[in-house]
Image (cartoon, rainbow, N blue to C red; front, side):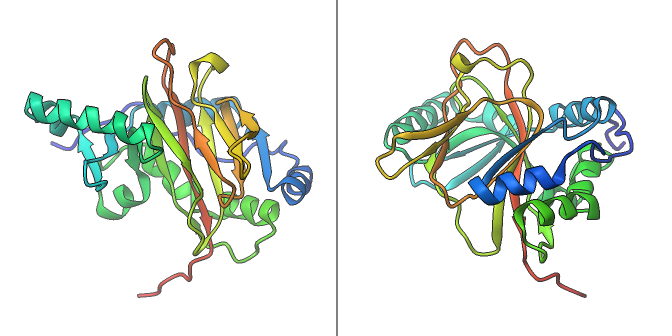
Length: 249
């Protein structure tokens, strides 16, 4: 029997009160902008619930720095010695500024391959690749040829992190995160930091709820590790606005 999911996604739309011209001006000036209250409260609550209900997988690397994407069952069924070695390696690589560890759900791949039919997060995937969200990106970034977005849900638990990096260019025109972290405190970690060439912090940004952040992914950036005393996970959708040609047939 197919899985059933609760909540049911409401009709998705952007908050009509968004000042798109002001956001576009800020992005052109700073290559960074945050838009609070992206959705009206009813929609935002439904989006948050859909994200939190994602069938999470652990995204990390092994000792060969190969991508691992482990379901909860995969992780539980690992022999204790193998699991301990993986956890040790994660910490060692993090100390050398290598890699990442957090829970993720690959929204585009899941929709394309038919994972978890009926899950409300698929409605969000289609919305993010629909005309309203793409039009918002085109106006703010100043790129009229955007065709789609990458998207993956993320949940950073205690000890999870993303080491400093820049995003590869290619067809990526700008990075975005859609934050759904409630009442976050700076001491809990999980800050989005931008760094200069000396690795000094240029700016740091607290995870927030119902806030869209768009920035130039070629800026050096990092997500600081979640503190052991953080009271809740850091939750977001992350991805890139892209201008790949649309394939037909």
